[in-house]
Length: 551
Image 1 (cartoon, rainbow, N blue to C red):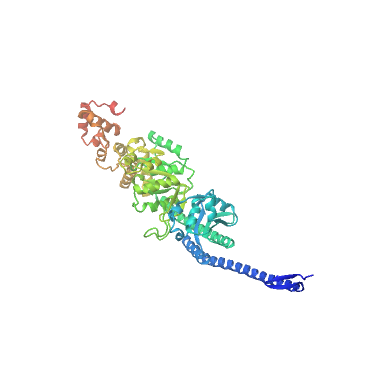
Image 2 (cartoon, rainbow, N blue to C red):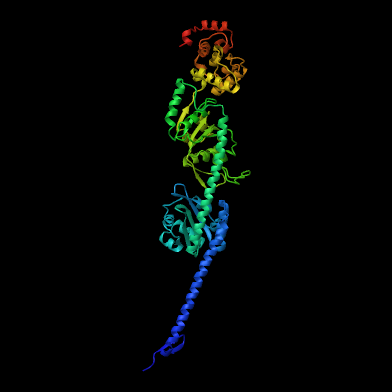
């Protein structure tokens, strides 16, 4: 019977040498195990080396621009890949905003970098949903995705030319920070996971640092505003006036104060629009935060955007550091846009967007900042006329004109004159060290007979001057501008009346304003700039009786 044989790499070995073969196999197995162990060790050492190098690169990073540079360089030099995109989660945890990417990766394909950055993702987007729900990095094979979904993202990946897309959730503790997207032919998932951990920490630290800087700036600016308010001579806790016109204003204020609705305060210069705005804010749920004021007429057109929305460092010449704008400063509070009718058209467009979307971008920045701001605007212009003339956007007007409040001019609320005058006398007594106890009937008559083109502001300034001119405890005279009342008298329809009718109407109007006083200081004759005897004669000729001007 023939002996069994075994062919081994061309050698014929009989059964006598089986033990030799077993020994050889054992040695080969040991050698292969050693090789595999060495390869595994080398792999671990390589992973640790990559992560250590990456850690060293981003250890000293404090700002986003430095992190972006470090991430892109390490991925390129160590892993031979490029950063497709990092998204960060919005405050609501639902939306994601583009944070950084390697612009060179997509330079030759469409859509453009700016178009990709403009795409707004949420956690419900299919690819993002898979990444967010996975504890490990997710690998998308480009060809397979084209066959199964043929999505726009898969088409874009194909154009770039890599075989796979690697995506992972960026997370610190129990908080989702963002998502990482890489394009490569092959990446070690363990290395990707380690890189994600370090990027997550770096982004969280940068975001925390940015918030600290913004809080610091906000506190500094609020401190400036508080100092300005301390210096102001107004007492914003009380509004003077109880006549029927002001009662209507108070009723409207009480209706709107508790809401978040936009308020548009209309009225002539000097009627107290800012006073009303502050009263609305102080009666609202936002009263614990400072109301921020912007005077739209006082800022140059080229700076108003930076003032409202803020700017990034280097956004323009002179922008040496990041600055938060008035909208961010007024977050969760009230923003008072004074003289809104003076705002340039270009700025109106951007203001409208922020009011509608409740989010903004700083000048020179790409990040979207969400804001919760209540708008109170004021103007002395007729905005409807401004819209018709093309100087004010109609869509912004409709957005602002949610709850209009019209402040009456002082000449239409003369019943409040005495209270206002006494208030300002008391105020300037304290400021000047005077001790004026009352206003003479003559001075009060002067105040009633004047038309007040500058309204309450003009009254305050004239009282201040009169207090300074007074040497005892009685304010005897108010130093009014000469003939300013007749120059600013409202126009009437002169074509429907005779000259005699107009003269009679004008004299009655003067007598009513002077409370029936004909001659002497503050009398109708002084207002009309005619002798008292002449006025008596005209009244007799025109059949003007007390019933006409005391009705």
